Length: 130
Image 1 (tube, helix red, strand yellow):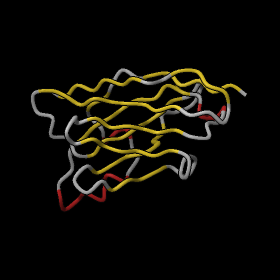
Image 2 (cartoon, rainbow, N blue to C red):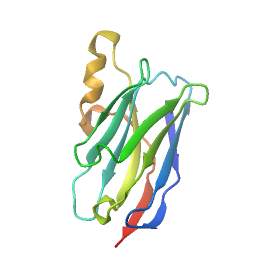
Image 3 (cartoon, rainbow, N blue to C red):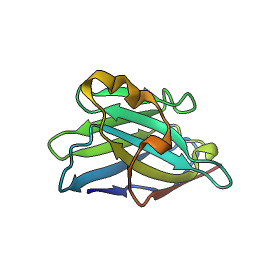
Image 4 (cartoon, helix red, strand yellow):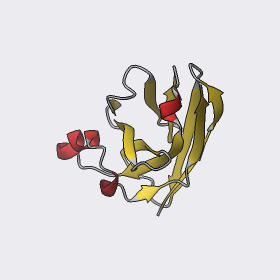
């Protein structure tokens, strides 16, 4: 069982920054594809960014590319989402998610399909005001 715990959400004005953190723990914390998803009011859950921790390959949704950065601290097994130039459209509950992919299919970590992820955090709210 993998436990994920997010932190770092909050309220900011447009153009501001936030940094989300997600600690990964559990009896078998061998997940190597970690991601951030979000769900805004009245919207479906969407993938924001994922990272294959083996080689730190990162994948971003077009809506956040160039503004958000996902990273992973192997020693702490913590994944971060640095969010810059925030927009009101970024307002959402942000969730950390984890799954394990094989080495041969590591490129599948680029798939921002929430149905592929078995383990989820409880979410952290991000609110961006104009």
